[in-house]
Image 1 (cartoon, one colour):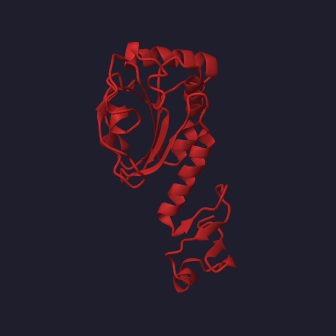
Image 2 (cartoon, one colour):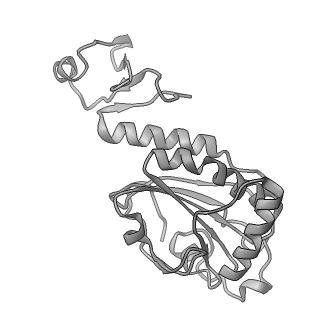
Length: 220
């Protein structure tokens, strides 16, 4: 199946480095960033896992959990975590899913549904498309999907920025413009009439065009 923004994130039960989890139960009332990897002990992914460990406090401030996934065993993940700590200077304390049978990768449309074979015999190239990022809300709906090539490290500062936008726009009838960052002006959603906007945004707005209404970030 093709997974799209707005779809319910598929539920699954899987072994992780922090024990077995049921995804929807584990989410609870939090947000989640899940990011996947084609193979353990790969250089780009090693840098990514380490950087996410450093960013974890920022995600936690936003009531957001982190979940990693790679197409190897949990035991391999535990060994990889030692390499990550030594080379990146940060300990991975968030769970890493062991997806040896490609179950979650297929469930999330990250790899061809007919892919098969033992994890140990599969290479990173075999699993090249398993380089995705998903943001999932407390409502268990997919809010963002991005897939990167293996040779390009992911920009997790951008993922954090998108999370800020998703959380803001979930609570207020606004959208965020190009390159928006926390605290900057926002756009009043087109679904809000001018009359309603006068109540919701008493500070007013500017309109370079009738369909663009720019106002201060709510709660800022």
